[in-house]
Image 1 (tube, rainbow, N blue to C red):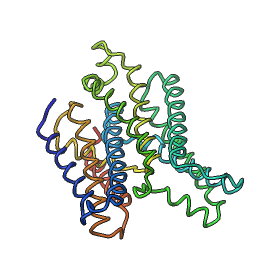
Image 2: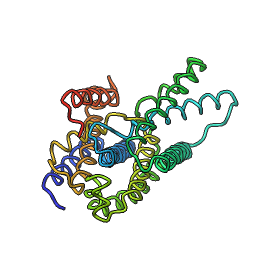
Image 3: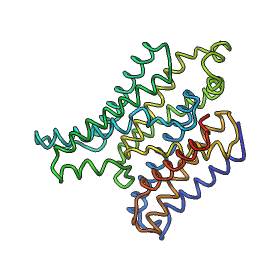
Image 4: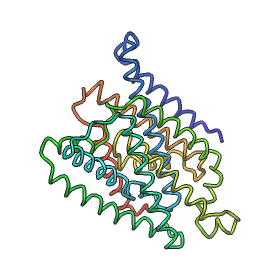
Length: 314
């Protein structure tokens, strides 16, 4: 479904990407261009992943103030990083490559979340609301365990963990980015071919089943897709809890549609635009005086409170 708003967003993202790459006569240095290209690729991958994953999660939950982070992805990632520092320092383990670390983080997060999804849904007769509640409890458990282990670390060891508490776009590994890009491309193709099915699923479980849709099976497939999207983006740069909420609110305001043929690319493109333009501002204008992740979390959290206050939960 072609739409001029999607073309406008695509043009805006391409313009922002060109500015990010070429600012300050960077085209004269192949080394600078390579570094910026890797960072730009990371920003695009994370933006597409977070934006699309949030739209899918809100479709399943039928709630516009929820994001996949409520399921405890960020808490699990932080617990993993804390355990790695805690164990590696104590046992003097050799460091692993960035690509290997990315694959390990992604695999563990995907496996853990899929186990929780399958076990909970089978016992609750596909109740997505109860699954969300279980995710909140598990996330709280992970945060508590991570906080306990962090108190046992030395200040220098804790500083290593602290660096992973917010998303960092400056240390993206090129090999890890390539793996993430290939995985996400395959997933995006499958999701795009299923956008009409998502429109029906947004009606709810009973109406979708009445229309002949195997809702329970598709729900598990979408949860697996969400797990992959969030795990890849989190393992690549770190947690971004409220970016999805900020992006989907802007997407619904711009698109004014329930069709996923517009919502999916719209959310992905808006997320890319926010990240690329924001990173350009902080690097080129503010000279890294602050952190883009901190500002996004603040704005997203503020928007969350505003939506709750206005009662816009659906």
